[in-house]
Image (cartoon, rainbow, N blue to C red):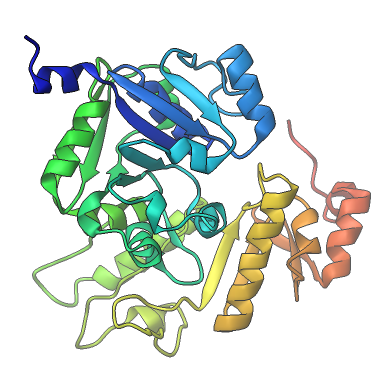
Length: 358
């Protein structure tokens, strides 16, 4: 006679994946290697229909084959969440509140929620797990997070990859890690949820230290930060010298950042580096509205880096600068962006005697 435990092992684990991007597609591929049934919610109905017909995501990781025996696509989230044991959130942090606005705590009761999101909830600077706990009364022990080192494109190519699964309930982390382990991926479980979630927000950490004072630690840190910025990185510096911090003086910065909760600092300026790249019309509007609210509520500045004028229809600039060959060559108001949109870069290159290279 078959035991109850043996019967349970024969029943595939029911998992809902929320999101239709590269990381969501990669997770669907990984999970499909094991004994699971996946209910995949995607916002765009056209993508849902395409996957049902052709078993490929038409927008992201298009070469990845979707197993129709294990994966069903949905356009209604309530249907995707019905009867599942795990809910995986794989959408940008900025879209979490809008995407989940029609859900309530009953949708999450008895389910384990996995955040595959790198980022914090905008406007509130909240970790995704903290936001879920607050909004849906979700016990923190029912949550876990996924972090790399791993890239969706590498998973799609079935390159050997590694993931870290973190939850304050180590058994939850272990059970979900087992669902991910397969021939090309190894998942490890740990209990430090907040540590992993914060580290997922920060790409790289460089520590500069010395046992002796006055040897140039601050100078090295500033020079390194400026070099990384010149390479296109977004850099933050933490000056741990509590006796005589010199980095603010070296960078020409005065004042101290504000903190409303004693844990996080309120930024003085937001850097939006090509945020509009790849966004559709609706997403562009949502991102722009969030940026405008930050400017209004926190009196925060914004540096918007873009190749296109369209985002400036939503975020009205005070100043517009044109960069060419790594330096600012033209400055003006909003009209300068319109002029560039209409006439292209040719007049700028001619004016500053710059030859376009292939």
